[in-house]
Image (cartoon, rainbow, N blue to C red):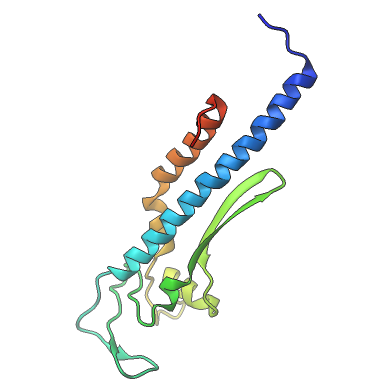
Length: 154
């Protein structure tokens, strides 16, 4: 049995923590991109209500809304194109955020949850994508930590 002094062990833990954070940053980036791309795909391929249509601001093309309970159907594509993810490493904590950077912040929320007056039915886009990717996220993060601890490269 080898003797390890406290200073060496402390250095080993600090080195591993830094490596784990770096691997987690990469893993969370992969997860963020997967969720973002799934949201955009789901919006582009959502079922639409063919019996209902209306003209948008540009008045050149009729918009067919998605069926309630499905992701919003693209009209201008602004919401779909505004989906972004960020990964942060602050104070030893690594985390990711996925959401919309759309100028009208309410629109993304209205699509996700609907409006309180019932004029817009919920058309969730973020929560279903997170649920769909839950296992992928867990596996990706677990692999990043395991690979760091075993010295493997991700």
